[in-house]
Structures are given as structure tokens and as C-alpha cells.
Length: 113
Length: 276
Image (cartoon, rainbow over all chains, first blue to last red; front, side):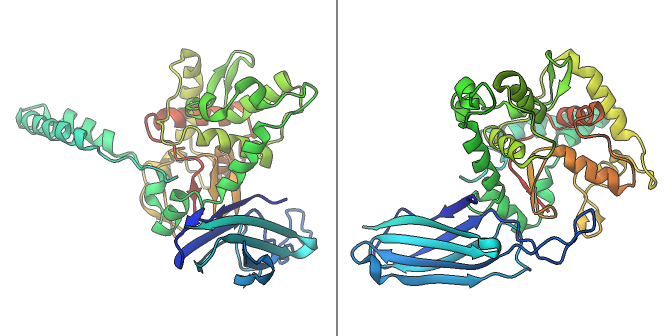
């Protein structure tokens, strides 16, 4: 499990625009570099990030809030920041997928006052 | 949590006004001008590497939700509570809550170790605890877990002044460190002082040369794409001038660390800092 730092307000007003920040520990090895012994370093990238919102009332009616495709030019420990509008209480589900079967999911709840 | 930068508080402003008035009076006195202005300049001229960075890099350090070093801090925090070695003891079993017990500890290192009979840095103290108390193997140099613990401990001293111990047993190391700082080394024949004092603030290959004050270690260095120790940074400079670096954890390296800590005494700790 990779370490993550996720910043989401715990509460928001209905219709408020909130900022979500996500940081994850990952080498983002490009596959173009060599080690100090000269051997090729195998590519190891996070390829896709998706954040979806599941309302507490109807979790099945989730919708994608933000998604991104990551490439070799993205630095190690990728940091993403994006905005969204919240209309109801629910859970943000964040999912990273990458090479070598890398998969991580984190959840963060928000309450609409 | 946002890192507070050293600002003059309102209560200090009045004092500074009075002080500057006194300086004007002193400067008007014949023969007194040279010494007082030299002291005043000396007190103000020290700058952290932070002050030489671009605003974007500064923003990365100031905001914990962006600072990648916080990932290592989280590693260290988890390790603090996990049982290690044959003793099955965790750091917390002896030291308790690091937020309280480790406040100001990182600000004191390097310190003289009576057990080792020589000055040691924070990483060596962590390993000493591992081998003696936890009966666990020492972590290797620049080990990610070790850096994580270091970063977690250093965070507990953030905002506090660097406070090298008043210990005469450290004097030999400090003197040695100062000599090494001023010693020309390598094929390029440069000393630390040649760049970091004589040319500080000027550019070297697109980067500003900082004054070499260890205010934020362990640092997340963008060039490394990861966290590293002060000794790793020192080795970088040594290979940069094409000298053979001293061995990690060697007496010379710790002596340099002890001298740098004394030189930066009173400057505020920013750990875990971000550097370009």
C-alpha cells in the first residue's frame, strides 16, 4: 500500500465549490533510464487516476468527478488538485491504477450542511 | 498546517526602532562605526535555502497537503508505533507520543554520544536505539524507513531554532568541521566556503547558490524525486567538485554536520523542507 495525503473538506454547503488535493507515493519510473550498473530500469508508472462521488442516499448512482491519464513525464509522487461542486453528502472514491498491477483505492467522506 | 516564516513581531518593531536610533548615535561617534555595523550586518545576513527558491517551490514546502515529504513523515509515524526487533518494542513504548517527547530533539543534533564516545547525528542515534534497545538490525544509510523516522522526528521541531548543545566534547568536531568546510578539495579544487560564502546568492548552472544552512533536513529534493539526508547532500557537492566523498556516517561527515549546525544556530527549522 502506497502512502497517500488526501485533502478534502469534511463539510461543505450545498452547491459549494470545493478543492480536492491528492498526493501518492510512487516512483513513476519512466522505463527510459538505466541503473548505476547499466541495466534498464523497467517502466513502473501510475497510468490512470479516477475520482468518483457516491451520494449517501444512492451509492449506486455514482458519477465521475475527475479523471486523468498519467505518462512518463509526470514526476515521482504525483500530486493532483481539482475542483468540484457538492450537492449532497457522500463519499469521494479515489482510485489509482498502474503498471505491475498497481491498484489503490482511498475513500473520503463529506457532509453537506 | 502552514509553516510560519520568521517575521518581526509588532512588539519587536519598537525595540528595533530604538536599536537603530542607538546605532545612528553610535555611528556618529568617531571610531565606533566599523565594529557596530559589522555586527548588525552579521546578524541579518544569514538566509535559509528557502529564501533562494522560486515561489512555486516555496509553495510546495509551505503547504503540507502538497509537500511530498509528508508521505515519508507518514511512514515514520507508522514506524514509530510498530514493534521492532527481538525486544518487540516500538519507539513509542519507551518515548511515548513523539509530538510531545520529541519536540526540539532534532534541533539539538549532532550531539555527543557517551555510548559511542563520539559525536553522532540523528540517524545514528535512531540506529543506536534500534541496536541497543529494540535489538533490531541497524538500518542502512539513506534507507527509506530511516529517512521516514528522521522526517517524522524533525517535523516535531519545525519552527524551533536550531540549538546545538553547549557541550565542550563537541568542540573538536566543530573545529574539524570548520577546517573541512574551508579545505579545497577535488579536481576542481573548491572548498565549501568558496561557493557557499564567497559566491552565495549568485547563479550556478541556473540555480542560486544558497548559504548552506541545514535548516530543513531531511529534505525532499526535486532533483532526487525523493527524500534524502544532509549527508547525501554533502556527498552531492563533493562529487560535484570531483572529490571522493567521505564515507557515509564517517567522523568527517558528522564533523561537517556539527560545524554547519553551529553556524546556523538560532535559524528556524523547516523540516521536512523542499529544495530544487
